[in-house]
Length: 550
Image 1 (cartoon, rainbow, N blue to C red):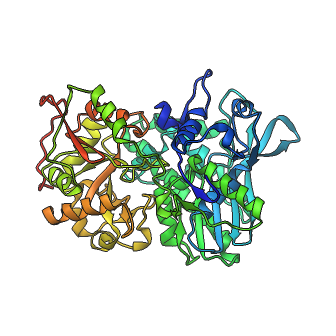
Image 2 (tube, rainbow, N blue to C red):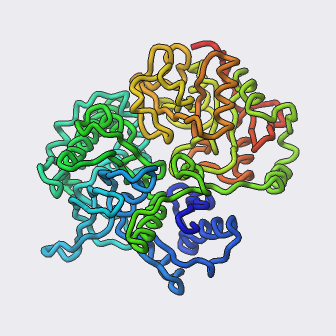
Image 3 (cartoon, rainbow, N blue to C red):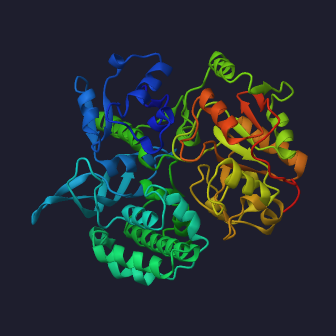
């Protein structure tokens, strides 16, 4: 960042190619990302005035930066600031942060091996400052090398149930998708271990460290023989509890005068709960969630806090001289033509350039004929959603497109939904309640009959879709692509899902994109103005798609 202008950002996982930022003992958890940003700005590490972050930072990092100025801020405060900085005007915002756990807040006097950590934090931010109006904390174990256990945490409850029903604890998105197939019949069972207090400090009490809770869940799975219905019902019950918790906690802002409610923290990625709040809250204010609401946004929030503490007032941040929203959602560096061509040469003779396809209109014609393509379009995204920078794009008019992408191309569970991308001006033609029109895919919308009929591949089993809207000042390429596809087909929607293989992060570089394109069996790759097809016409992923069938 230069002044209050953010220049470039990247998540380390995009560079190491290991999800969730996993790092090995001999690696730096941050230096690849730091060097990526410095190289883009033609700076050296000695040009940096100060490094800022949350106070939950690996000790290896503090050691690596021991010769530099480092300032750390509380974890939930960073989350809150990262949301507030997205607002375009000096509004008064209520900000609700909830996640797995945040900064340590103290010790348990009766148990020296346990401490307390942030689980819910509520803030009010305004042009002249901010205030924490209350926190809920959880009780954990003081651990350095092993997974910790935190009570009173929605995030930890999701990780627990996600792992018990058979997924990786960090794959909570799978559990959220599964919840639409179930009935929340186990809410009562789970709420034997949960209470919702009338004060912020007791807003969510959950005994995740009680062995009886795990035994109860395992018993439900055992009695149901672990079948799909039982796991779906558990997921649905967990989602219902999350909806209830979010609505309950947001209600604490009723006593405050706010212009907007922001959500942040890893649990703010729960699109179902976000839209439940939109549709049921009594606050009567807009609800905004930043694209990087998980820990990928911590550094940006720390930047805002550093600027605030230097100047004593709220700075107006920009991204490369433009308004922060929505441009900050795509902060990756641009790759030069020479870098793209170097990558292409590495994959010769397995790919072939199709020189007839250069524009968004050309690409729309290919997609309308049934091709499923990788899209490498200028800067990459920050956060877990592909927003048109590193996306897989397809024709939504056949439900078989969803089946091919899920089963054959991405190798993921067939019940998982695919997202639609649509121009903001067209949202009301296909979806209900424009309060859920979101540029970052962080809310869900109920679909109209026209969407179910014309674009069945993007409709989830519960009649909803996680929509990405493109505003009139959004990415010009995506705007042209959607206009062209609608002219060809009469449908103003495209499938947009993340460009990554199973258990890999979203692609970042041209080499990543070409490798994934061939490995996944995509029909083509649009690489910043050039279109490549597999040179071998024998395709591993063959599933007939009628582009006009539903």
